[in-house]
Each structure stands twice: as C-alpha cells, then as structure tokens.
Image (cartoon, rainbow, N blue to C red; front, top):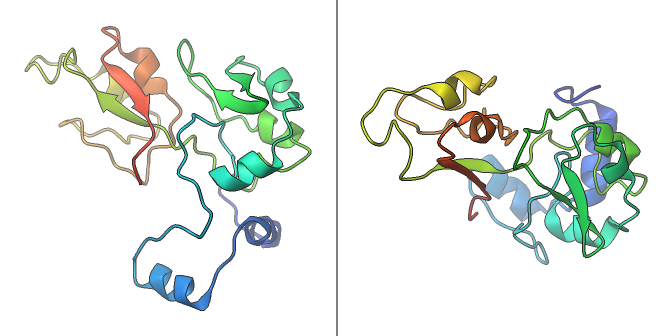
Length: 177
C-alpha cells in the first residue's frame, strides 16, 4: 500500500477534491493557511484517508463498506456517514477502509491520518510530576516529547498513546484550525 509515495495518481486524486487558485498557491508558498470557500471544519472523528470534511459529507453515501472491512471494528455509521471510534483499540492505519470505499470519500492516496491529536488531562502522571513515559514509548512515530508537547508533523492520530495510558489521562481531539 502506498501511503508516503506521492505519484501521479495521488495528485490526480488530490486535484479532484481540491481547487487551487493562484492566490491560494501563493499563500501556500508563503506559509499562510486559509480555508477554501465552502470548506467545513471537521468536528466529527473521521477515518484515516478521509477527504476534506465538506467533500467527505458530499461524497460519502453511507454504504458501510468501510465499516465492514475494518479489522479492528473502529468504524461505525452515524447519520449515514463513517465515524471513527478509538476507545478500546488504536487504528493501525491499514487502509482497508480506503480500499473498500467506492465513492473515494476515503481514498488510499489521501493522508494516513485521522487528524486527531492527544490532549493530556489533569490525571496525567507526568503532569503531576511523577515519572511516566508509557504514552511516549507506545508512539511508533515518536511524536510525543518528554514535556508532553507534540511534534505535529509526526503524529498521525492513531490513538496508540490514548490506549496505552493506564490512568486514561489522554483524550483525542480535533485541532481547532
């Protein structure tokens, strides 16, 4: 499965779901971020490989193919749209959901990222001054630093840190932007 290889098929899929204006191109080159007209901010936990929220909502037909192929049973249909539920097991980003999706609401060439990020609660042992590195050791991407800050480019939202925390001090949230 190709998750890190950006070839012609990736860019064709990307451009079918994205409009890039000259202004947007220059903003991207200069590092500014801006949402496209009509783009919705994701508020629901979606599976990895999901299209932008507005496109996902328009394209996902609620067929349930992704739900039936998820080997860890982390997907469910809510209001005829696929949602990700990482409460008892982490997502291994296997891509079977994207391979099964016939509408390309989930697509193997989209990022293998749930866009969920860990938030450390007040019950966190490290935040209470005690030594604990269970979440950091469980993170295969090494996205969690010793001070519990996150390396955003490394985190893929798999939820392994949440599942490994024995005091349930980690929740997975969608960033505000």
